[in-house]
Image (cartoon, rainbow, N blue to C red; front, side, top):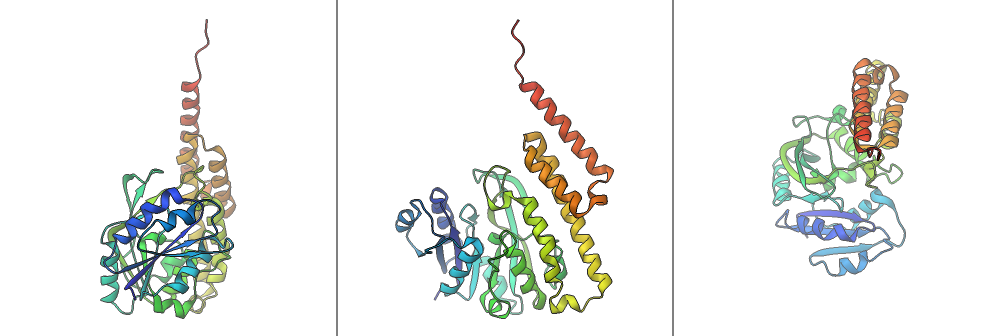
Length: 316
């Protein structure tokens, strides 16, 4: 039985899988790497047959990332569990480091670390995304999406999953946040600022799940109503719960507006429009404040200048 089980769900991306597995095996001295093939239709199975040191599970029908993670959890043997998307990478020794911190604090349900942000080629950009908090009772911060949690940066005490349940497979794109919230309801969370993984940032056209930012964040706002019915949340006053909703909507509106402004000069018009109009839908007065419009106007001007510079001069 391994100390930590690391679960990698995969679907039709065999060209990325080898690197992810190698990084997982190098992340700990006693790690069980479980690859869950979510009914891939390409040569993923044959690629996995060549990978040493993994436990391979193939699903007969596609169950989505959450369903694949749950299958991995059910066959795992470690006291601790970690997750890694097939296009992300674990850093050397990172699992040993996080597990040691969890072992030193038996009350904590999970630990979150920082991540190195990378481009589409998994080359770090030099930017680091830290969780943004100290360790402790972080239920409200997690519930409000005010804690930066990437699945590849989290290690969970497996016994805590028996207290709250597994991933909700009906919450595509936000199933991890839902689980972190339920875990944090009754247990403290450890936060460590040391980077533990390399996260391949999504682009509007990359086809990653996180490319659908507006849809996922809008779904999070809708699902938050259910999370506010958790026993811990119901102990708060109605006014406090309304404040949580308001802050969350504003935070998401900020995120969507800034991402729209960031991608607009690069030509991602549909992505930018979807993000900005979703921000308006969630928090119209906040999203439409002058600061956001100035940034969007500058982005639009930059886009127009770029198009103009790329237009061939007329031949005389």
